[in-house]
Image 1: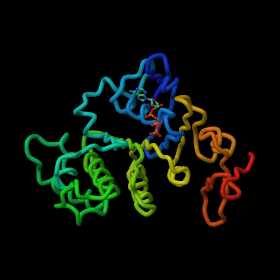
Image 2: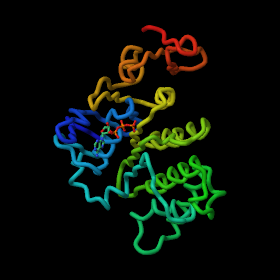
Image 3: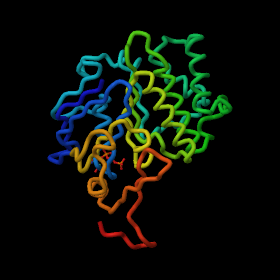
Image 4: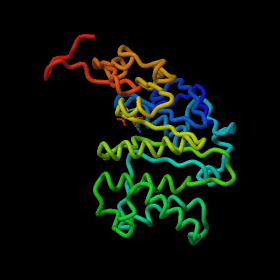
Length: 269
Ligand SMILES: Nc1ncnc2c1ncn2[C@@H]1O[C@H](COP(=O)(O)OP(=O)(O)OP(=O)(O)O)[C@@H](O)[C@H]1O
């Protein structure tokens, strides 16, 4: 379980994350939603130990974040960043092998190499194994990083639960690969692991989230199961634009659409 209690983070006197609390359990995907600048990436950096909160406590698996050694944490938790600034001409399989760095000393083992091949296959990029990473398209690069984080936490023999933190996993991906990436997260959670993902696409969020955390200007404006918390008023408030929730008879999850009647005409909600 990831538990965040009363987390606050400031830049100068400005609260970027303001008294945020949540729990993400084994078997769950927790999706963090919010407009640009709402504090989502900052929150993710705090819960993955990249930034120190001014106030509050984060624990993973019942132990405070700062009590875990970084090398230990890297064996059971992986972070997919929003921006991956890799500018050296590594091959695709070398980039995915970087996910295995926390697991071997000096040289990768046969197991590390097998895991890299399996992760490449899982992300559907095994055909690019020997390609220069820099020659790939934006979406292909994103799938390489997905393979890298899954390779990192393929299994963790000494730890009960594995944790995956994703900042915009659907970045640069076409609709099919957006769903493939979230299905990979879904399967990973179903094995008893924990996923926290930032998403901008509300419909992906509604389809895959077990729980949602809604942020506005650093504060939580709603949290819980999608069916319990999502209403037009709250999501419209979150993005400062009128949104409507529709239901399709063939789907169990609702669909969110901008409340725009004709080309430029917002429906007044
Ligand atoms: N080092 C910094 N200096 C000044 N402002 C910062 C700094 N880091 C973050 N911010 C501000 O904090 C706010 C929250 O940033 P954050 O990246 O967490 O937003 P976000 O919700 O992830 O946004 P997006 O959806 O656009 O990625 C933004 O207004 C951002 O400009």
